[in-house]
Image 1 (cartoon, rainbow, N blue to C red):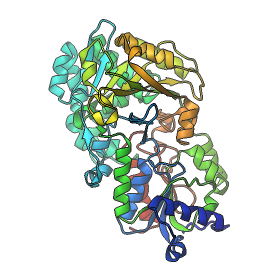
Image 2: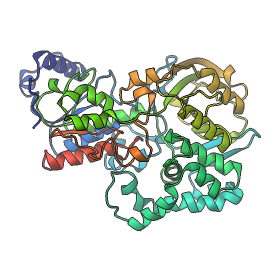
Image 3: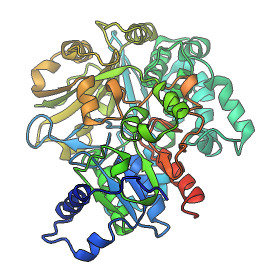
Image 4: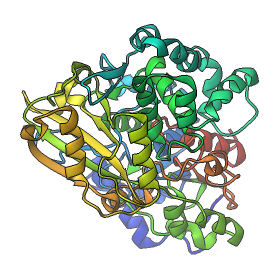
Length: 508
């Protein structure tokens, strides 16, 4: 059992109880509730998808679970808000969720009963070029390969094979480092995955369209395209477009969070918002504490209790490039030159592999680029609940140096205008978030790094250390996307951390 040496202060108890009362709508706090506030089996700090999944997994065993969230709204990186004008629903951070529908954690939960509906656009991804053409990925492998001409068959062998073998690869890709259940399937995947995206594209594909398409997917890794494991990122994210689709929740990303929270409450779990944890010493006694935090904020809360060697390893954890994000309220759809872009919720703006690679390499070196690679989503084209009638929403971001305070709005909008002339005339209102704003929104995103840590080989298999979810403190675990399998809205970091807690201190 984790017992804070200084106990749980009266002020902290009152604050938590008041938070519970406000959240539940109670007018009076029952005395019996106050007496038993310390009787939790597990406390989860942070209500992102990983934190909520960890809480659910433990609550499903009949144990009492409390989730503490510092913000006024649960969800971490999966939230929605009216960022521009009333009636426009914007996703504050993540919008498209390629892993959500394949996640074993989410699949095991009856989230549909709590209002979650997935929207799947006709085109998973569109990638326009300066000549007016556009490459695309649709749900069917055959239709996608047929569109790629001479690169269709190489695409089938690379991405299509991963799609076919996904049931054998799922546990290895969406889990911690361990002996694989299907080593031969994983070895076949690894032959291509353990290459850089640049080497993969130039070695497998002949046309600018296929190379640019795969390069844009690889750039989600937030690494230069000549680094490992950008090839793996391209293959896996590309395969997800066919396995389950690059889909998004109807009504906004918040609906996924709300469905997780709703399910947790039916299991007896409790969520308290507006309750920041300043120190691990302020927490009530519990058998397990699970922190949905990346190393930097975790150290701020628990660093004084950690052994020096482990604390230094966490201090060496590296955060990478930040993002500059913009949300638009529009008076109409984006006027794309190529209609394929109008049929996709996700559009990659960067052109050729050479241009994308140059942009990412420039930012990685700590400099700004005049022509950034831009990831854009336009969910209101397929979900009318996002905007007033006739209007639309869109968001986009580009990578910037860690903690950069540069204003990239004009450069991002220029990239949109490049492939959709007249776009700026559609803009009714704009909201921007620099890296500092991203970090204020979610402390896990240090310096604006939405991956919660660089995902290179040095931090892929030992994330954040070789102890993965465990810490030297008995009953204290990490469950954020800084642990395996890493970034993505899938909840698997929380799932595996909860399994370890159940095995080690909760005795499932």
